[in-house]
Amino acid sequence: MTYSNGVDGTVPELKLRVEEDSDNGDYLKLRGGSNEEDEGSSAESSRCPIGSVTSVWFWVKLISLVVCLGSLAFVIIKWVGPFLIEKELIPFINWVRNTFSIPVLGLLLFASVALFPSILLPSSPSMWMAGLTFGYGKGFLLILSAASIGVTLPFLIGHLFLHKMQEWLKKYPKKAAILRAAGEGTWFHQFQAVTLIRVSPFPYIIYNYCALATGVHYGPYILGSLVGMVPEIFVSIYTGIMLRTLAVASDTRHTLSVVEIVVNVLGFCVTASATIVCTIYAKKKLSAMQSEDVETLQNPIL
Image (cartoon, rainbow, N blue to C red):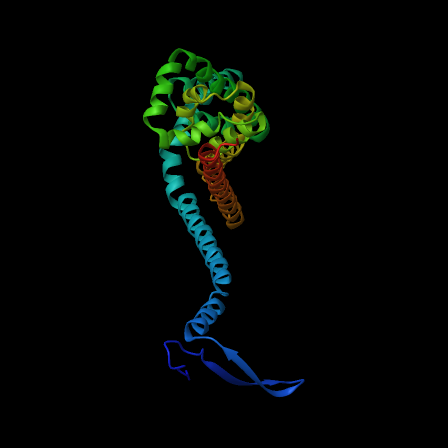
């Protein structure tokens, strides 16, 4: 109820509410305000469950993703994989083993991983073959040592195209913003940015040539590149080992047991999920670093 004072104003509405208290008994609560305030308070109380709903929805999406990946892996391992392996992979593996010795094959794989990035060719098939032939230990050392050369050669060759690369970065400032973030700040800042770029889905072959134009130093560039490539190397080695397992099973006409299928499916799901999580994390961190750089440029320290 409102009361007019005869001029032009009103007295705020007073509300009486009877509430119960187990300790003090019934009591009256006097409250002033408008319906808008009541609606605001009820709206605030209705917002409380939003965080829990978001968390539940995140887990639902994550579980759905894992189930989809597991189903896809099961179909590939059970039907698609054996067909392709019997028709393509086994003949190719037999040809490689009959043509090259293990040392020569290792040298060829090392050369391909080291040189292919310089001529803009993917080296993933060579990494798969390294995992298939040498396993985790020797395969990891071979790929990592070759990759150090593979990212160094384009960095050095980039001196010949430095001015063209800088002009290209100026033409596309939005696309080049993430790359420029890797060439700014301290040594650790550059190392962190390069690592995140390697983990993110940004084409690493292009970055090999553009890195020098961003002003990044070679030390953080090479270390960040090697650290950022570790997840990709393990995924490639695991892929090669899984292909070898399927090839042996198909060649010997041995059907994979339920346990072997489950182990391979779980390994594929864990590997794929870890890669996706690392990629999402890297993209978020790069976006945060890019925003910090933009704020720094807009609000320079006097």
